[in-house]
Length: 149
Image (tube, one colour):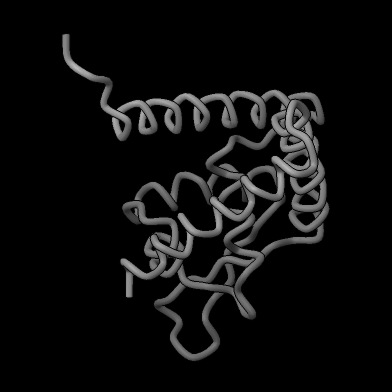
């Protein structure tokens, strides 16, 4: 009989947790009736980090998706009034994407849904366990950031 593979077990646990987080976040989004998919939510959150409206190509790069995927997401968000396409003031061939007031309101609701989902996920942990988990996650996130540099 072979001994258990600790890295394989951890990888499986991380995948299961990721799926659970997505399920719970999706449920919280649906409860709030925002009409936003998880992918659209991610695009709205990404847009909020820019100081000025980004190009579609910038969004695709930041989201690590093909430009066509961003176009589809923006189409849906624009149809619901959460974003709008605007012409670049220096290059009329370039289109930029900006949040609307409704998009900003939706973003605030999304943050609330994510916070509620996190509270549900973390509910079984003590304060000490949460602090430990936070430190471990910081180590993993910082390690991923170092790899990209």
